[in-house]
Image 1 (cartoon, helix red, strand yellow):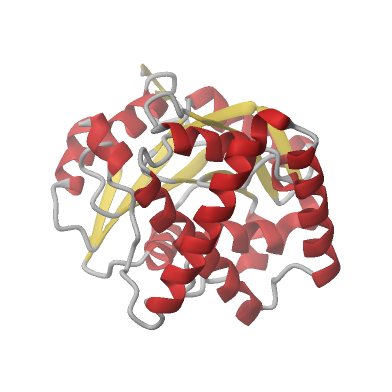
Image 2: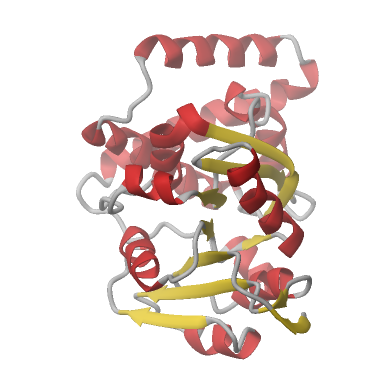
Length: 287
């Protein structure tokens, strides 16, 4: 990090729930290429029972580290927004690796493209995953959802975009809530790359996917569900791509099994969900 001080160009809000194993690497990936004070970094430790706050303060002394006993990501986002002084706002999950250059690219795009939402290009590090998980990701990335980039864990929102979002409601899939709310004025920035560490095992992948499906079903309550015709079109295109790509057939089979298992898990656990169905396999590998 350069010691040359400058005015903060944005606020980076990072919710963190029991992220002591990986949050230092996430913070350092940002700090490494930034100027001193360039970003206002706010880490919101919510409901943590580990040393997330201590690790975050040690890894990034210039960050504002907040703590709340409430284990809720959306509550953490709202606390971070209330504390932030700089605008626009970049949202970054505590288990994602990116760079200062990627943050700049998103922030600059909000102004140059006059958009409310800017998001980058996801990369999945499946090198340490079990074979079936690698097959799943090979097939899943043929989903039309990825055609225009993925809004997931790392994106920037303008001041007007924040006003449209309002207070984050208490839902599970906050990323998809943002995407669907601001989709009409959004920009995909391929240069803003970020790395996601997927679940290493099939059982952990099922837990994570069950949370995704549950979160998507909640969105209809907030009038941001996809139109039925759009959902059908996406499914048809996805299946067509899978059928025309023999290398993806094993992954298509795994995808179907994971989807069935995840939905079944949600049905069995209805009304009795964990606060945060967090993948521990990738996090343990970072320790």
